[in-house]
Length: 185
Image: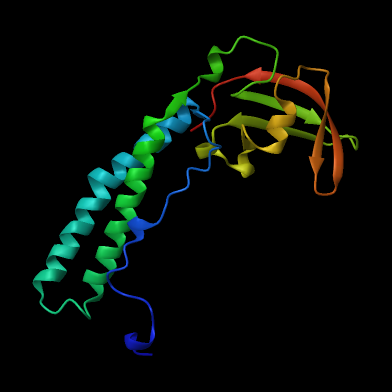
């Protein structure tokens, strides 16, 4: 279909779209040292390695002449916008990050950075680590500190029973163990 019949333009600037931080208004961006390092490494990789390579490709493609049908040029410009948007996002996240080291916590209560083992009514045990929004990884048991399970566990102690509202109903979870340890990056 001809571009004449679509509302798409080559001038569409994805940068005009608002970026959602995912954090509730007025809330700090808590993060573990491992999470901070991971974001910093991603930022460095984008700025030092990937962006210069894409700029070289776009420059080469632009020197070939007609840009309207030049795939390397069009894709490269789009990729540069994606990289720049991600760099801005990472810079904001790192700037607003409040690093909390779980190993420095000295409490038996559950707070940010805790690794908690719970047992449900059926006897199934589950271990979760309460981490920042940028570190969520359900496969590794890393849940956001603003997730429903973390909110249910916050301020509980070993032996406490907490109630967790789920789509299938209320679940009761008994806190078996609370520990604060370094989380793997």
